[in-house]
Image (cartoon, rainbow, N blue to C red; front, side, top):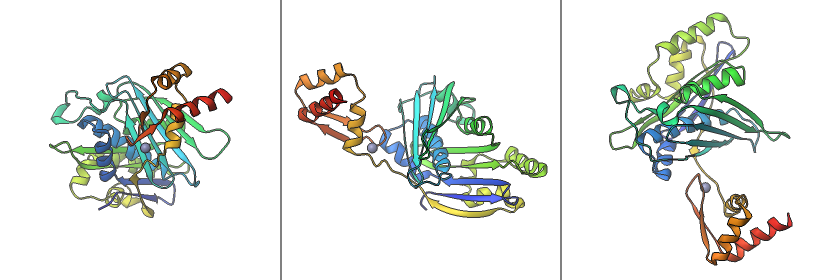
Length: 294
Ligand SMILES: [Zn+2]
């Protein structure tokens, strides 16, 4: 089975919902970044959420970026997604090893820590949209639910999970977002709250063989669930030497001069996919020249 997202509505379109299977893309992220289990879980959760949030965008060139900057050992995590189901991300520190919580649960909240969660959306308008909230628990699902409720005034339930196997591989990764529209009835909200508070973790549902469709059926089956779309999703970077050169252009003139004076070609890696791009001294001088002219 490949990764995918489903979009759905319920209760006569007063509820909208998303669910994702992201096992392959989280496994890919783990492979690229060599993440330790707790980072695999944290990054996988953020990638899953980002992918679902990206599926809400409609424009051809729309982009959404989530940054979680906590004071925990992971440091900052960044996830970027386009409107075509391409998601990518990276943690500042992939090699985090902290004690597990009760029942061997990975301590994602402890690894993320306290700090800020920022969502930026470039929807082709003059100014990108930016929303920022304080990280609540660092468990990511809670934090995004808080973000939607406070920053976008859309009460939301967000469940995210990554099950890491004993050999550190990704066994399951997935999640859901359920959003209450302003015209939803009280009994609709109460019914969803009851289901959410009684729900098992997403990874437990997936371990029982439940698909994204089954997960939304559990939450919204009694409320007239209508699945409207099924979209493929994958880990995809799409970087180029040109874009990496753009990152080089942000280092200080002094540092760039030092690199040029060393007289050797350098290798620059893309943060998202670890692809390496080589820059000759002549190319570095060209970057320097364009800076001096600009
Ligand atoms: Zn890349």
